[in-house]
Length: 225
Image 1 (spheres, rainbow, N blue to C red):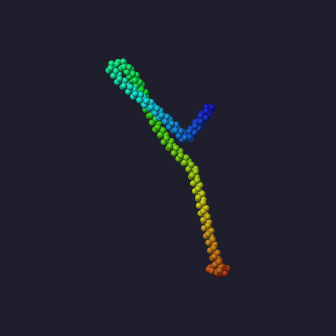
Image 2: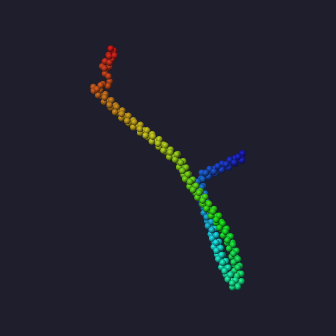
Image 3: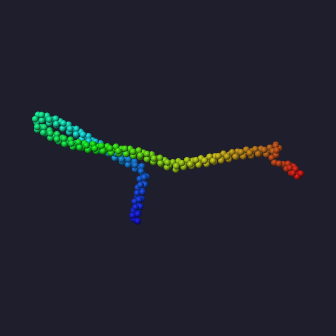
């Protein structure tokens, strides 16, 4: 049981860490890219330092080669003059310079190898960084689009729906009010016309609107026959 509880706690911690990482993935990516860019600048400085060392060794190699050439010519001249002692001294100096030249050549070869390796690493890192920066821009744009899609249905669409319903109710009320006004106007016209006809009939103008008693009695006599 204790092992199960421990496993559940560890699982819950791992889930929480993953959820936190997912929720802040874009922020983490931005900082990681900043760290990578700073590291890349440091690597470039390291390459520059190695290249400066190599340049210094090349200058030293050129200087040593010049010294060796000068000593050799002077040693040959000394031998021509029968100065074996001076030629021997020059030979010893030349031997020392040649040893120094060999050490310089080895150092220069190491610097060249390291420079080539570092430059290849930096070039690859720059390519990866550019690809990640493009990916970050795409992810950033997608995040903004998702946020827009998330707020549009809940906010704008709902407001538009409510506005459409309000406009429909308003138009319905206006149409009803217009219908009532039209009916009242028609009713007023009809009432006025009926009253005028009634007054005219009562004055003997035209046929009476209601049958007279004499007319009814005459009709009943005809039925009795």
